[in-house]
Length: 159
Image: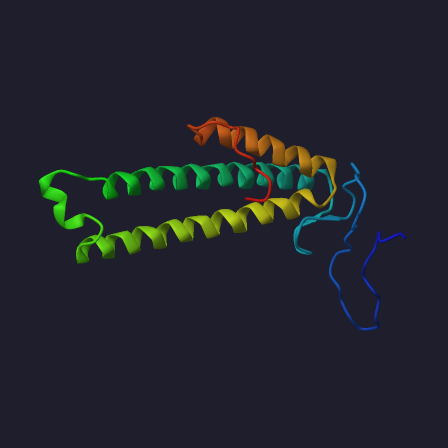
């Protein structure tokens, strides 16, 4: 089954750029649409710009992961505070419960951003385009080098 052009021409309808949709691995970038019809690769310049954008997006994912890890450590420090000046902030006290709920909300938001971001990166990878896949890998490398202070052994699959 050839799915190279998924547009169904109808008289009087402008469908925008043609998007080449591949279901098999390819290096061909002609008429490549990346995630959205508007993110259309029309030549070498737009391919290079798109690959750089993908590297930055993927590196940004590593930054979000590191922000989440640091916030988690901060939240643990706040919850484990034992000195007398922070006794009002201990879990179980009204002020402590409010702060605990606020920290849980921030953690949930950071987690949701990570999940959304990871699925977006998965969609990038699912273009089945070798150039895009390499850009994702380079972005992960750059992001890890710039932002990560932890072990790379945790799986990057999905989230």
